[in-house]
Length: 28
Image (tube, rainbow, N blue to C red; front, side, top):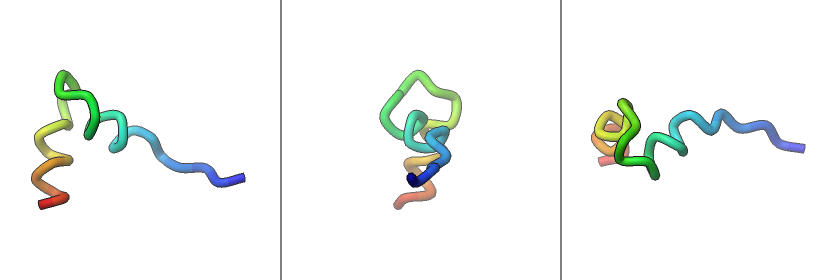
């Protein structure tokens, strides 16, 4: 069983999330 922090994933796919833009900028 693999445990993953889903916070960044949720933020990445949810434009309404406060960290959405931050996650996108980190990936670029």
